[in-house]
Image (tube, rainbow over all chains, first blue to last red; front, top):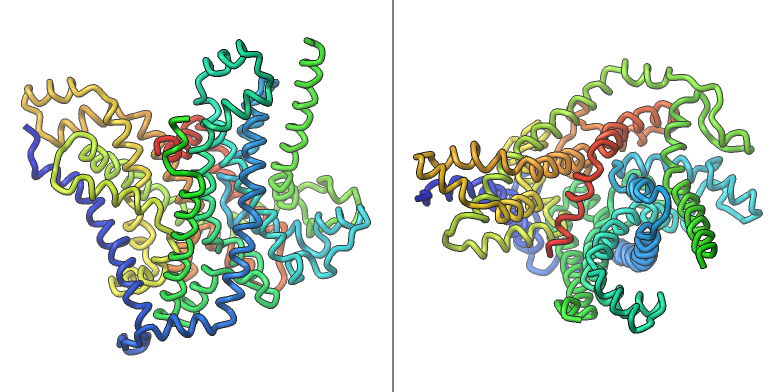
Length: 290
Length: 275
């Protein structure tokens, strides 16, 4: 018989990592958000909800919240729809489709730091995008796309869509291939056209994956940080300041651990509310029965 | 009808080719800039094409002392974290798949929840904890907290659940102990899943930026992505050298992808499909 002792030994790596590096920080962060932590003496002073009140009056917080929400709402619809369209296209019988699938996926596995650096170059004053804009007689920012408060955030958003579309395409593709072929054959016997087949067979089957894609993309996008850190440092004039960048700046730059934790928890709360709303909107668990 | 189909297919092919060129253009740009002496800026059409190619930037980057250190740091961290995950995700996944114990449901729920928790929430407390442990700016902080990951546990549990139990039972009758059964019987059967896990963990950790960045401070502890991100902080940017270093950072991943495309894709989509 298997020994209970070895069960515990097998589980111990997860128990240790979970308690020490996930649960403890999670709780500690929550406690810190009600305190003022002095980096010099290590003293913790209870200040109740003061961090949260401070946050409501902090213009940076509202700017970060606005920018982050704009980023999330502005990228997710495009990423999702594009990924779905690409998935449908590479699911057709065309030459070299495996090659296309792989090619679209390459940005998703490349280091985000590397990608952000390459795009910094592409967006520069004499970079590729400015050349393109001049060629098309469009007005473009003089100092480069990342140095204008009008275009900096939009430039990062465009890059983000480009980076993530391949990954979500693969998820949709997997869901498309899981649709039972018999259903298409049955609709053929009823004389359904391609659109009807897509609308009444494919789409209902994609619904759980649709929810999953939007959900993980929401959680991920609310936490945008690397792109901002590498490309703009939150500038120009706070136009790309995001929530996690603010957490980083307050927590690890200015060492306001309590205040940074309050911002982090606030974002956590927002992400949770968004996720729950999405689950409700899509009707969790309803997708499969259709 | 057949001709219309054919035309449709070729139009589609051209559209896909056009999109592909857009998806790969930044990669082309990176490599092109890394192979020239110029800044890579575009003033007229001829600047879009590579000219005056040289590998000198790569030689410069390789021979500069810190770069080799960054590269080795990335390699050491990714390898140790991968080895850790191979052993520990196997152990934990096996326990979840084959054993009964108290609070099993709760503990498994913790795996799923950690998968969903936004990492930003632990930045500050983890920073404080690592400082208190005395691990700040050491290899320990780059490796130990990451040696087991929820997605890996999930993957291994799922795979082991679908394995037949007979071999394990037979080994037990022959008097094999629990560890021997896990590492001599189950582990060899798990090779395909372990391959997916290893590649997946290696990729994620090779590219990892946030935690290596906030939990180290000295130049000698930087991994490649951290070094690249911080290099850019200086006043004027030496694009050709920076792009050569970036290419070196991106290349191992792309090579891995060419060889293990199937494993990488199944690793990245595994979590999604099983929910």
